[in-house]
Amino acid sequence: MAIEIRATGSAVPSRRLTNVDLATEVDTDDEWIRSHTGIGSRHIADDNTGCSDLALDASRAVLTAALKQEDCREKTLEEIALTLDMIILATATADYYGCPSTACIIQHKLGARNAGAVDISAGCSGFIYGLEMAAGLLGLNTSRKRILVIGAEVLSRFIDWNDRGTCILFGDGAGAVLLEKTGNPSTGSGKRGILRTILKADGAGADYLIIKKGGSRNKFKAGEIIKTPPHIEMNGRAVYNFAVKAITGIITNLLKEESLTIDEVRWIVPHQANARIVSAAAKRLGIPEDKFFLNIEEYANTSSASIPIALDELNRNGKLSRGDLIMTVGFGAGLTYGGNLIIY
Ligand code: UT7
Image (cartoon, rainbow, N blue to C red; front, top):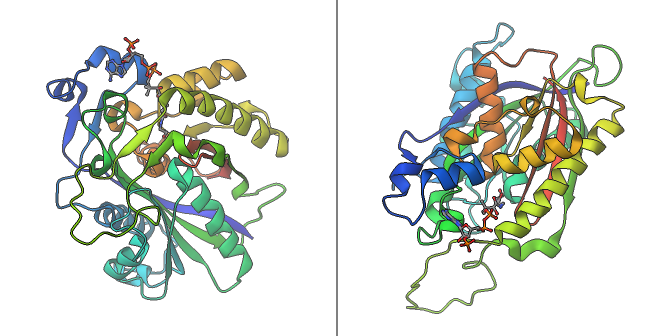
């Protein structure tokens, strides 16, 4: 039995905000942003678009891609949606605080009436966590076959545009994969699917990347006027230092635990947070930088959506073939970090 990625999909808002555009409103410039982060632009959702809307578009894209495959028995989007056993949404920017889960909203709009639905909160590592949780759910219960794993964010809604240390970094978007349990082997020759995952956390760094308002730390006060809306606060240096260590550790350990060399890996798909973090990790490990797939220049940091958007871009551009060994690696609020080794 193998847990395989059957198809990928993504959805990114059409409105593109370049560094040059941003510098007309914020005390920054294109040269600083590019040299410190590798970011050239970000895509921003319009005021009426919530996390579930982007997630729904990415979900429809992934199911449409699955329908095009030769061995797909379902003919329509409605039919394939009914085959889903679970929807797992990784997000830090849900439609609502606490409840209902955004995954339930997606489940309804997608017509996935046979699927359970749950949101997970693991910061920018959310998609990596989501894949492993889905693999566990598929493995535990023989009746489950298909799970949709989504990473979706509308981070622009939680940005303090006066804070140039954070507002330049983030963008909106969603990516998704359809995971399917197949009869292929997960070990030995001809093995396929998710081979190994590492999931880690270091809650001592919880304050380094945080949205403080809302939640049970805040007492409800009737009639209270909230002057400063919830927004991202970040200790950039601390997250940077943590990230380089986290990425290098995860890559080293995933390879070691599967007795693989880096040459056997076709792509490392890192969380797209900062191209400098990736360069530093590559240098420390002696890995060529072109082993890492980066699209941060176009989309900036879309948190839990960044890895599935990158996977979908690789796939759509014909840079990913069946049988390729790929590695995801990421870090984020929590602090969390981790990675998956997958034979595509
Ligand atoms: O998904 C996880 C999300 N978070 C991350 O990945 C964040 C990781 N951290 C980082 O990527 C980097 O720390 C940043 C890109 C956020 C900041 O880069 P840095 O090299 O750590 O800059 P810094 O905060 O140490 O600031 C250096 C200088 C300061 O000026 P002075 O005090 O040296 O005169 C800042 O005021 O750069 C200034 N600065 C800027 N200048 C122009 C900070 N932000 C900007 C800006 N434009 N946007």
